[in-house]
Image 1 (cartoon, rainbow, N blue to C red):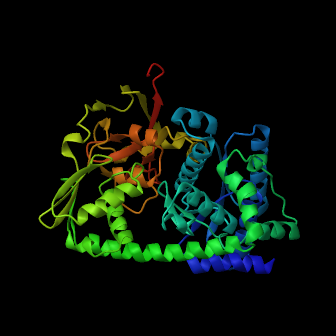
Image 2 (image 1 turned 90 degrees about the horizontal axis):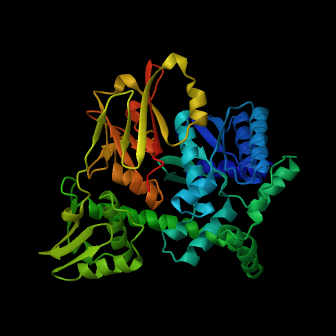
Image 3 (image 1 turned 135 degrees about the vertical axis):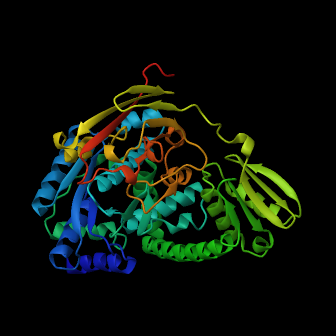
Length: 474
């Protein structure tokens, strides 16, 4: 028992997971992995090894009827046994998958991460802890190898990552699943079994139950070898990113013109993986999504750098030109999203904007239950401090150069870059629009509100905004 807990503590300390962290949201599904994590972390806190506070968050995917509801009840009981707060939220994965034309796996992950991030934001949690372990790491790497990947994919699961603008930490990455089960059994810890985890119709389950066991018959320590490869790949990527940033710093980024200029000589003698990282970072800084970019695109750009004068178009409205010893990467001005007509309205009105119906109402803070709202709200409703809003509100489409302060983030961020980092599906990203006052963006709807308009203990009046799709929209 103590050896297992020491492994978890070592992972926390070596990766600096809870440094300068006051409150952590523990993502607990009810399965053995997350339940063990909750037990270990609360035990380490009770022994004075950790100083942060914990809140348990549970997302009910509503995929298994009464079994899903029983999982939620189990997690509430678990939190009560620890005497810590618990937040639960039900999400309709099937409806979301159908609406956005996603697989159940992808829809579930998207909703789960979005919901956990919202929970953390609403309850002053600095990060979200998930129970990914060493076997999950191995499965992720094999999955990426099957699809085709470079060394970035071989990094696997990072101890700390930022997804959907939330900070996620993984204190269990240093242990195997069999160690988790042994820990639970030795300490009489109950957990819930999710029968869907045995459904090999899902790719990850197929890797877990059919592919990995066969390979491990030939190499018993395969999982540990993959974990070691992951660590080496992460170190290599960090080295590559450092060199790429040094090169990018010598270039010139013009945000107004949406272009980046760099001396060609700086790339000519670079290893291809550094060139790739420079291009990747520049494209993301310009707000370009990388979903449509393949290795062939980056190889083609690498070949362009070797030429004296050449110009070519690339996905996502990007034009790259090599001329007079420079490399110019820019968004094609003639293809930028045209300035759309905006809708201006006063609080209390209901307006239509494209496919959306948007309603607004003002509430007295003393007459609403903010905690209950945080627990039950969906992505299509937000509340803002009315006193921070200047003048009438404006609804419009996104424009190049839009910037805002995403709640839970570390500062101002370009809207296009935020949407890219949030790893949204294409349709959600494309449909996102802006709600702002005379000066600032309140909400990149329906994705994330601005930290500058959040409700605080000083708030007296609230503006609630709800959006819904028009029934007649095709």
